[in-house]
Length: 541
Ligand code: VG1
Ligand code: CO
Image (cartoon, rainbow, N blue to C red):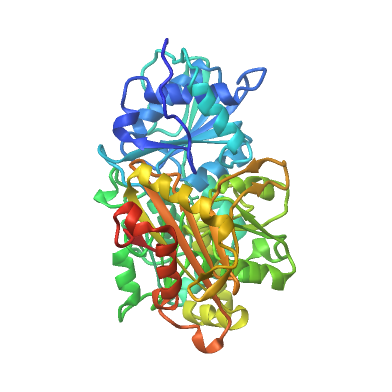
């Protein structure tokens, strides 16, 4: 089929994300899928190769999957493993790619972004290691999209994706697989399921909010069926194409029903939630929210309590804006810590090289070397394992952790959908002022360093520049500014604020209060009000 390049097909932090209405434009999806194939095609083509396909079930998932199957057939793939109903969570897709030795996979998801006809859609490619395409690969896809003149699609009727098993599509085989089986087997190999069954049999109460997104079937199969938690443990467990009209974003704003339950008089022992595509996690104990940065540190410190990590961990990686809480754990364990740019694609090389076992991001993402994506249900299972072995509450574990390591007070303030030009101006202005900042006073403290984060991958030597502006104060406190790479309208400014508190008497302050001077400084340093017209952030996490 002849076509013409379409502008703007530049993958961001996690794949190409646009409005559903963009993806519905003539040739749009086909152009991008062909650009992926052109960018990753080996010299000898796709003969004999297997592709994995699935998505988070959002609006347009089913139509997109049918087109991609016909394009995979016309591009010469031998086989596509597709989740039943074209469903696969992001971590499950990573698991299936690895278990079946696939060439790679296509995941249809815009993660935590809202869905429905007016919502967002997205598409990402994962390589043979199960991880998100590295930057060089996404750059090649973008380049391919800019010179595309034709795409290949087989003329054929739609494939029935409701029935498990193989179907021929041209010379290719479409194998419909259970979206959950491989993933459940992997989880059972990492964790002590009998011990977790005993935990629930003893009356432990979990509430898992699937937010009407992809994790519902996975959570039911694992928590309710395999581990014997009572029916109703999983709430909002039926995936809906528009997520019930909500943002499937597991944070304190969008998971407010769960938050209210966990702060109430009859709170369960553990509250958790995941996002649209199942790679994020929110952890709330009875009466206490655990920030994702703290959760990463606490999981790393206690990972040895689960069978998969009983021999210890080789290292920890965290994205640059993620708090330094995990660094203190790494130091205590005597293992290295790596600071990478935002986005899971930067962890792949470190995991493949065995340099790290546990990775995490402040945006509610944690994972390990078991797959090459962050993994929401995995994080809940590791928390459950720790709670089972330690026999303490989430609150006790958090307090002991802070007592041992000190506490990294942390918050992120997001200014969503601001004018893109104003956002660029704000960042450029601040970037230009960075060299003059060291030695100046901010929030009553001296600025120690100020820079634009750049990352040199220690495994393949690739470099990624302009990954966030950081202002570090003499006491180690930090303010970080960066623009989101996952939005579909305007620009989103993220401001990350962190302060370390070693004083045992000051470990239980309200977070926004503990950080108030830094929050005020972050606003004035970047002139946020004047440049964006916003007097307050749209979301605080
Ligand atoms: C955000 C988060 C980042 C995460 C990415 C994808 O990116 O900050 O940590 O890896 O989303 O997560 P950005 O560029 O908007 O800050 V998901 O769950 O959307 O696949
Ligand atoms: Co996600």
